Image (cartoon, rainbow, N blue to C red; front, top):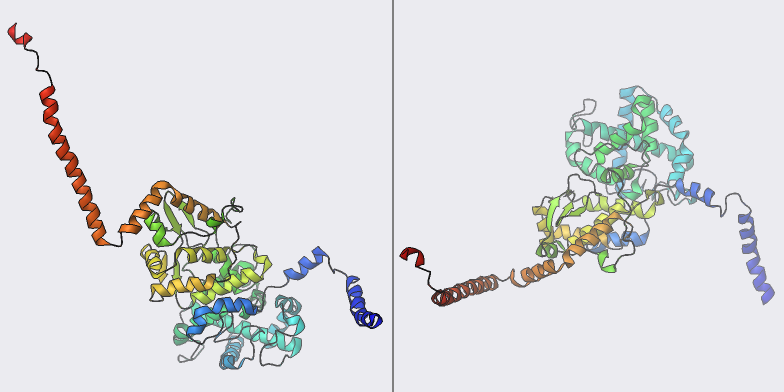
Length: 469
């Protein structure tokens, strides 16, 4: 029996020994280089489950990590419900080639030169899991074709958006590349560009732009800014001036939302557990905390000074949840993201917005620009996004948690909060409190007037000696 078991295990032992002899195995430097290549990921089932929640039960819809209109890259290429957009992709490729006088072969050669790098970016391509749900694989040649077609499609979409849909080389009634498409199709293309499993590396766009428009149009900053103008979640975003090409549209959006100098690491990483959360906006207001919009829209720009909590303005619409989910998934899956500042922001907002009343207070302070039409919908959105979120106590936002809670724990603010909580919701209680205060004042005044004559009688009469002289 023992010999049989040894015989069964022997192949596994031999395989492990062979692997140990390979270059780079169990070598931190080599492993770091290997992990650094990846930037596009399949979102694991447990993260997708966190993102569904009540939204998925309320209405059947795609998970917030998957495209709903157009596939970009290999993960969802060939999916049946996304096939209608393939015709428009091919149409975009043909228009671009005819307008610029370039050849399809030139574009293919440009991407074949970096095909290995592009393949390494998609983490699941090596084992065949990233070939989509319908195209049946096709190998390297098919991969390059998909990248060329999808890249040209995005270039044409962004070009059309830059001029408000007024392009003269497409039919005026084209369903996508027209004013109609700019209004009704591009918002969903923009949303799908920010889905974690639908990322097209910006290296694709850079290589294509270099062939079509020249090297001066394909610098790192030029490509970053071109994509940012289309996908930005804020109006007039500052340039992404990191000096390096972003990985993909999510990386561009992530950098834009976190513009400004990185905040210092929190000094309270070993603080009290109650500082992991902050009270709701209603509770903070009862304790005397005021709310104000931050000077910038950077999600880093959250601070607490002299009893006022400053929070950056966020426009919320029906695509915001998908975008924030993808940004959080990117932080969760990509070690190179370096920080979880979007996750920390969502965690913070979920603490502050626990109810529709809390959302209403932040809307009144111009912190939340609510395009969902319901304060309750905003509260539920942050609640869903925060499920499964991991709090990093080294985040600078943890210092804000600590400062807010320290302010609220001051005795006078605790008394104020208790007074407001116990009486503010009952108008008769307020009337009774005012009447009691007035009666107290009247009693004091009456007592003063009662006692004052007594002291005046006891006072000795003034001397008249000066008059006699």
